[in-house]
Length: 324
Length: 210
Image 1 (cartoon, each protein chain N blue to C red):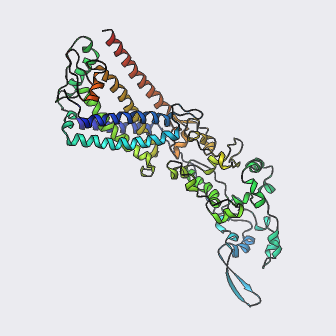
Image 2: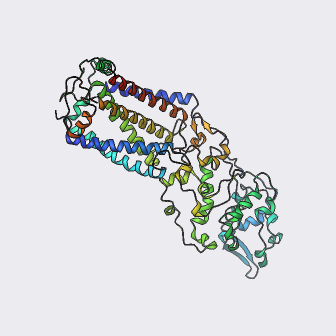
Image 3: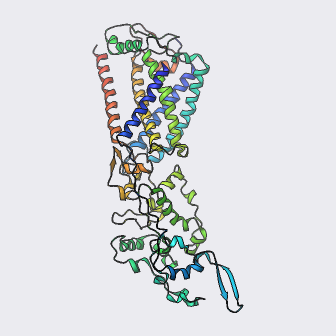
């Protein structure tokens, strides 16, 4: 008997899964991932190549006129721009000298060129309507990073103009986007040498600071730092108002609830599908599973019915016991 | 008659306390709102107490299985194929009709038969189907890295959690029915008393226990 009950259960689970699948409950979306733009050919290819010859990799060679021979030297790591990364970035169509002085065409470069003022995002992007740079600028000025501006903090600290590429979030590449975006923060916050350039704070151990998070690695792979560390702004694609650490989200329920905060941040581009086949915040299910946020309305309803039914039967039973 | 040895009673009381903690904290995790908590504990506390209780429950469950393997208590859970459904029906009929019309209990408790057929089936389903499933899926949720990434395009965590909360729900329902049927003894409180003292109160006019 035991055996046939077991068989029945297996059959039940299997039928349930197949029917869920057939009803499309767990559809997998197939959207094209970010297009590979490695094949991009710049109109300034030739001009840029004159810079990449030295700045494209860690070693460069130049002719020392005094000694009359070729010298091989190491390129200072902060001055290396990987060519393939550049030609995949958002700024790939520019010539190096669009932003840098044309005097760099001469070698050796004149010393005073180092002092040239650097452009900021807003210098070119002011007034744009796609990415709302003015809104970003406004948020940045209220963010905790802004107070470091005098120490040298700028947009570039997070968004290297040579390699930065905006990642269009889709359900397919979300994990990559999360890793890419988190790497931006960790670039300074887990590299004390860089961190020290801007602040006198002691070294922070990110993992220790976040050890209150259960399943820390799952959290860090599934959400971005900015989910908890920025002020949500409905009008910007990505919030830029980094809050001081004391104001970071620490209540589990902000995400682990029916009105999950994630729907206004990480999943905002796809959050039109608020419910998917009965799952609240269903879009999250394509990538992750969030306890408390992904409850299912049908299961809720069914469980209430069963629960009510049981109580009713008990009630009737009690009634007959008293009145028999 | 002395029906419930000490180890059963110890296991049972611990199990019942853990069940209540796990249900309350489980509901807290699944149903807390953003602004205020549905139940007394918040998500963070709920996660902690759920984990602690679950680990104790798992150890307690191993103790229970071992007890049934190595003592004679296991025999109460053995099911015979013959008359399986007719016996179930007899018991069901007694609960819904017979007991209100002065009929005798069809399966009175003896030292050789602790459970009536309905009880036996529900205990087997709860203890040997639902509990292993909820423990295994729970371990999966505690250590997400061991869960399969996905099955037929569905997130493995989602399947694991659906299994976990479904079993949690069935076990909660089981517990409510279990507690109610425990009032069906000689007097409403006699079966509860039996589970504390170890002695089952036998009586003539209705010999129900669950």
